[in-house]
Each structure stands twice: as structure tokens, then as C-alpha cells.
Image 1: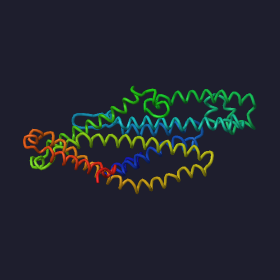
Image 2: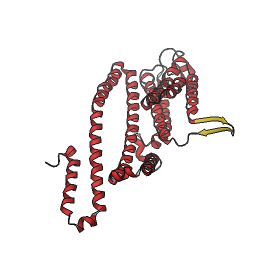
Image 3: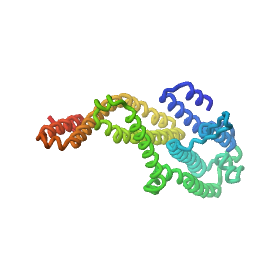
Image 4: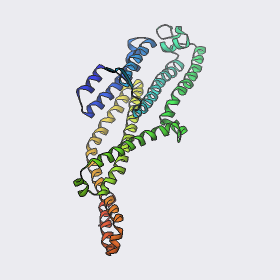
Length: 342
């Protein structure tokens, strides 16, 4: 947490701050699921590490200060995008922990008859069945009991993870909340970002000089206020999907590495050429996107100017010339993408 705070305070680069935040989330997840259980046997280590992580997060969510007016206390209640990502993260963490426990219980205990994990033994009140305590393998009766324990844990962990999967509108249960809380929360976040950005653009637009407005096409401003602001929310949505998919992919690769380290390394290695292709392709896609935006802006300006001066156009018989300009702008807009025009 100290290193993360130092990284955020020493740099103003957004990429560095995002990288530091992602690293902090990864370290917190890895510490809760891997380091704590190994360093301190039982659930006490995991609980302690979780409390420390929660305290660090609360240090970001709450702010305190003292001034001449007295002490002030503030809570970050408007960072809904962070809260939505936390829902996704909690769902993935619960999913990972569930798979670790259930996979070990099924493959090692039920099928092979080995003793159960120590914290599971403490959970069910049978410490004599824990690994390192029990001698030999479990009996047939004990393995049948573990089968029922597996069913209980499966249903219980599924019930715990289900609200997070529904509220985050992810996984195979996202359809349950379509049109209600989960989907509406995501739509509300995106539309709020869009609305705030649109209002900020209009406010900046009013602050520009008369010279700018006299030389600038109104259609371009209309395009920026409506279309560009909508593209920002689309990018934010894609980033959320990428973060969720990447976290799930790393989780799956980690689980696979427990059974076969070679396959786990192969899954992680696949990311290298994928990221390399993305690094090569993204600048070119950005160039085409800029060309498309410029052409669409010109098209919007042409429509606005034509509709605004339609009476003058008809009075002077300039319909054909205006139509030709409109068709030329349409060719410029669609030709790079669909091969339209000569």
C-alpha cells in the first residue's frame, strides 16, 4: 500500500498510475489466496491479510483533514466505476477460491482418499481428518461424507458468488438481472459519464472566442458533443470487459497450472504474441479511427449546413450542387471502410 501511494504521488502519468493500481490489485489478490495460507496455516493468515488489504482500500475511499473550521471527513461515494469493478473482482476471487477448494476436495479427497485441507477440516469441526494429522487414507464411509461435504460447499459457494455475478451482470447468470439492478447499474454509470462529458464539452464550447466560432463549422461541434462523448463510454465499457476477461484468464491459467505447470505456462505464454499483435495493430487502428472521425465530422457539418440554409439553396436553385457536395462527402466517409465510390 505504501509503494502504491508513493507511485501515485510521484508521477502524474496516467499509464503509470493505472499500472501501479493493477499491480496493487494483483498483489492483494495473490497475497490473500496464496501467500497468507502458506505463511500462516489455517484461516487466521488469510483473515489478517484480508483485514490489512481492506484497511488499505479504506484509506483510499475515506479522506480526513483538519483546517481552521475543524476536522473534515469525506467518503468517495461517486466512484461508481470503481465499485462496479470491485463487484467483478470479488466475483472472480470467490470463483477462484471456490475452484481451489472444490477441485482439491474432489480430486484428492473423494477420488484418492487423501485427508482434507486443514482449514476445511477446521470448518467442519473435524481436525483429525486434516492433512498432517490423519494417518493413511480415508475410509469409504469418510469419503462418502466428503462427497456430501462437496455438495454442501458447492451449493454454499455458488450461493455466495451468485449475488456478485448478478449485480455485475457477468457470467452465465447475468441474464437473470437483465433490465433490472445489474444491467441498470452498468447503464447508469456509462450514461452518467456520457452526460458529464457532454456538459463539460458544452461549457468549454461557450468559453471559446468569437473568432473560433466564426471559423469553426457548427456540425463539427455537434459531432463532438454527441458522438465523441458516446465513444468515450464505449471505450470505458470495452476496458471493463477486457479487465474482467483478463482477470478470468489469469485465474483459469493459475488453476490449470496447479494440475499441469506446463499447460499453465503455455496459457500465459499465449498472451505474449497476443499483446505483440495488439501493440502493432492498435496505432494503425487509431489512425483509421481518426480518419473516420474526421470524415464523419465533415459529413455532420455538411448535413447541418444544408438543412440550415435549405431556404437559400432552393431560392437560388442550388439543389444539384448541394446534393453533389453531400454525395462527395458520403464517398469520402464510406470509401475507406466499405470500398464505396470510384
